[in-house]
Length: 379
Image 1 (cartoon, one colour):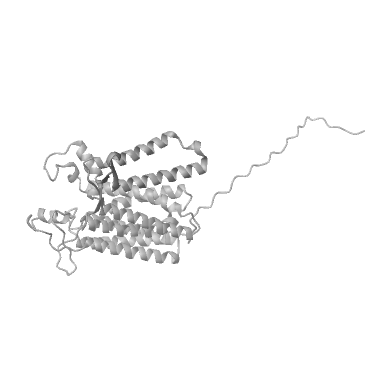
Image 2 (cartoon, rainbow, N blue to C red; image 1 turned 90 degrees about the vertical axis):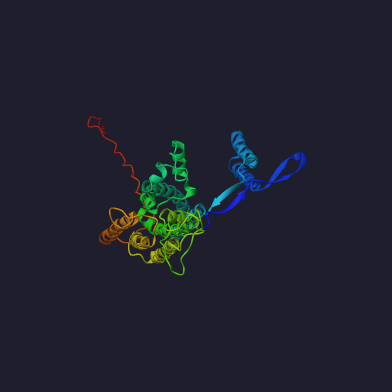
């Protein structure tokens, strides 16, 4: 577990006497990177549109941000933390977009579409995942503060709702929002959503793998108590540790949690295997949408089984099954129905790009002849 991978210091400054203290690390590196970006922006703009296109307002904005970066080291913030959870989400985003872009190019489609689609799917997926988490654990946000026990103000509640670095995303919430963004964007770019989904499903499972590695670094989505040789312990004050203390399984004075199933690693490995399977099966698909349907069926089976090795969610509806297991059963049924539907109705493989409709040709107008026009006769 490593919730914070590392921190970028903001106080690495060198005293140059009358010139003042110049940041050379932390803020200095950020400032240097910002100046390089500014220089690149000016060069590209001048080459494309000439010097007149570089407005004074834009330079003032860029310079203002540079000044803010320069002065950041004078505040009380000593370092910028880089969180493991967010880093894994970012790496998953990059990896997923890269492999989708590569396959799109092989299909004769612009790979940039994958990056644009990934951005829309990523944002909508995060929103849906967070919303699902808030609904599932609403008492953590709208109840009293778990540390102080005092009622939260409206501002504190809002901060808790958007505090993603503290963890709190449910994959199934993203599966409800991301497909809508995917469909709308695909239609907008003139691509068949099902054909694109056969490619994107591999990226989805790769994202699951990195997301679960992020869960491992943060400590959430932990497994149940176990005595297997590969069981993991988590340090004091971690999410699993506090959960076991609340259940009375360990004392607050303990130095670490009880040995737990590494459920995050199980889920990450299954995500990797599903990504490899869908990537390898894609060239052998029999009809458009088949790869999506197979992934749709396979993932809920995997998630249903892994939930038995987790202990971070209670049973629902008077049973021992978690809400994720109930959702998995519904998702599995939907996947099977979708597969059967495609098997009966699909015309086979279809190209990614939707063929444009032929333009309507104007119908030539015939010149009307009047019945009253005079007729010239030759004598």
